[in-house]
Length: 360
Ligand SMILES: [Mg+2]
Image (cartoon, rainbow, N blue to C red; front, side):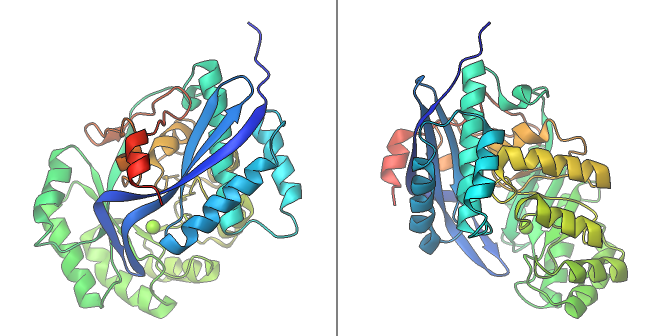
């Protein structure tokens, strides 16, 4: 069988604000809807690769959209070879650096390139990378919750088969955190894993104080208790509390991850496909985590993450937080608390009517 030589014809981008079935409240701001850039890499051979990235806040959406378009325009005529393209990006963005919108755009284009390869081969990316398509354990990811008001949905998560649930804390004082964690623990029972995410809201002494008080609720991990870039602070919280610390969603490419590992900032690893360098960056991250013995969980982007988690040697949990379901032709299904990667490619196709309706 001859391998097709695929050449990039263009990179298209559309900005949408996708409504969320479950808007997310965090300690550092609310996400009422998801500002997304939908990326399409077209090829001269007629195969189109798709991926989406997340601007987090509405004012960043147009700029991210523009960067994807402008960076993409420079790729016309290049071969669809994500490793080669990433080496090109490393040179191209050396002067500006790629922390921020540039890195997000690069990562999104990388994901779409892998999608092209998967579609060309007629394979899910999970298989293209040497893995198998199989159900992966997922956790249901909540924002700040009110254990009384949200009791029914939390109970429904457990009833649907989730064996792990995460909530966000740190939006108020310790009393509020304790009430939330105690309330959720009572609803989900002792056998469902419970994780808490502080979204970088605390300083080191306050993180130590709160985590010591929350230990009695058997928390599976404590996520980003202090500022993401404060690697030493994470290490100090970890040493002082003995809690299992989770970080990684704000690691920019693997250099940042390597620094966190070398200082002992985390017990777990949570690379984010959009900040770690797409599928190509993830492959390096998975190797680093394997060498360091860190369990890897994914961060949002459940559809694409399920593919890379399939080949991650220390894969732990896929995060289920539905960002893009409103604009997908076939939203991902969680079955009995598990997510199975879909192909071909990354398995993403848009609901074009919804894309038009939610265009930004
Ligand atoms: Mg988080």
